[in-house]
Length: 306
Image (tube, rainbow, N blue to C red; front, top):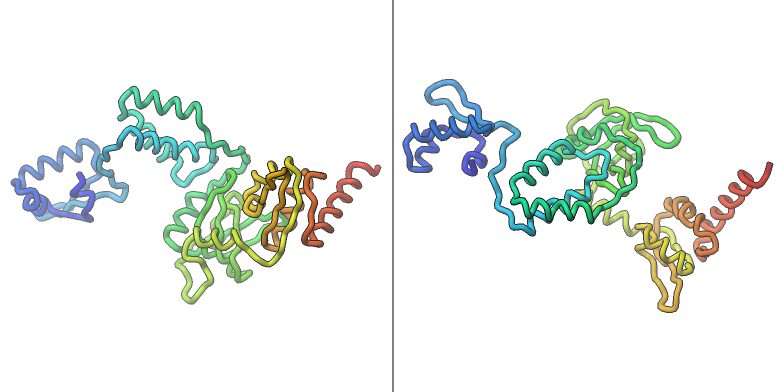
């Protein structure tokens, strides 16, 4: 199984020579593998070659008890995502894997599943095109999509960088040919994939990997942000991935967020700080202070004026 999995195609004679057995022995072994479900198909004729189907069966791997638990522990992080590129395959492999383990290890894994959870809030957002986008990313193709943003619906041609998941949602950073810059598209807002085409010729400012993109976006530097926090403010900001990067708690209590961020993120920061009330005081920039005043005024008009 291991030997033929590593080959694109082969003949019975080639295997007979490799294993120093007769051709008849190889034919009998191949027949037994086919009957067991191994995905082999052959060309007609005495000198016909054998091929392995695209969905190849991987050879068995020996796992230690700790390694087996690590596999299930890793899968726990994915179970609350509404959509996964290989959702059915994930369920299938876990069932196969679990059934092959000794009963005491099965019980131990069940206890892990009952006691440890990577909780992700249910976003009620389906991403039916996630698997198609995954294939486009892996094929390094361009895609023309119909995309629904907060304010409008548009048709765009994009060159995907990759996919990443965060807080229960899937995102696709991609070079947008219309805006000529990298934009982030939520996969659940892609309504339709109109076309999949080869990557266009020419140089495009697309990062080599999604990791490279994320590392660059984590440290933007066009706006200074400084916020004074109480103990309560510190605890709440610890759960916000962007603000947590610049959070500096004080030994005597409270703390400060002091960092460089993207100017485009100020609206998001204002929305995060608004529920904190007096537990957060914006020191810089002045534009953020003004946005906070506007939001408070809008809330006052919405709830307090008849």
